[in-house]
Image (tube, rainbow over all chains, first blue to last red; front, side, top):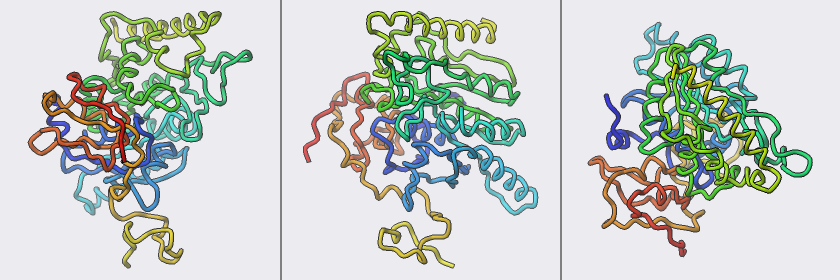
Length: 310
Length: 103
């Protein structure tokens, strides 16, 4: 069925208000959008890696989750999810369960790119029928904006403070989406919030209903950590896509498909200038940083186009 | 065995009465928490300008823009709205204005 925003919004809201995420946070938008793609009648079991999202949606006794939710540690969201999925399959086989459940793990970039990586890799390799959704806000925001392996080069964080010693984070961002593709799982996609949400909704639906393991990487801006005014979130997402800093693509059974190709690829400055974490890159004498950032984006973009046979 | 409901659990409850493993047996119990009191700026909709395109509804992080069973955008839920302003920028028709929230 083709995507329709109105029909999509009329579905049941599966995340409740009253959670304590910051005003303008991207992660609840990612979560409610993904959960909305569950078919009416289907239920979900959600596991959450330690993250802003976990501690803010699940403050005893107040839970924002309407689906079953398992609160666990930083490193084992995918392992927990795969265990529950296996138990479900066993019960289903014994005829002890009739309902259809879907299994979704949510983690931030810290819990996905770094700490939860081994359990994620294991769950994907074993091919459990589950989706791992990473809401990528490019640092450990919950504990006060420390760098993660997802933080882009030159970003100013509390553990990579820019100044005369270092130019912000020294290393490039880890390309986790491609690492997940290398697991040979049936569905991997990268998305964010654009326009009428067609891209993220369709990808989330495919990820949930593709039998076997699936991975969805959603860029979810953090106004506090990225230092931009909270109301500009959609502008930041659009700039990330139009500059090819965060390309939208999906990989189905190992085959790459580009979801969106900008008509005029914008220079990375259009994305960087909105955010305080990159402000130092615009100081006189730091032009080389923007150049280096652009080169890395271009390199990855060309590589992606080649993979998509474009 | 009957377990305590979320509404019966508060700072005064003893450890014997707390639910085992701090489990919660209902969903969505956070709806009793008013996050609207964090707000400094408040979104106000001008219904004359609203074209019901619904582009504001999916961008809300706080489920404060309800869409009715008829597919129409409803009034803001100020009980949860934290006033982030994403909706005001997402509106292509300038129908949502951010004003200072007087309490």
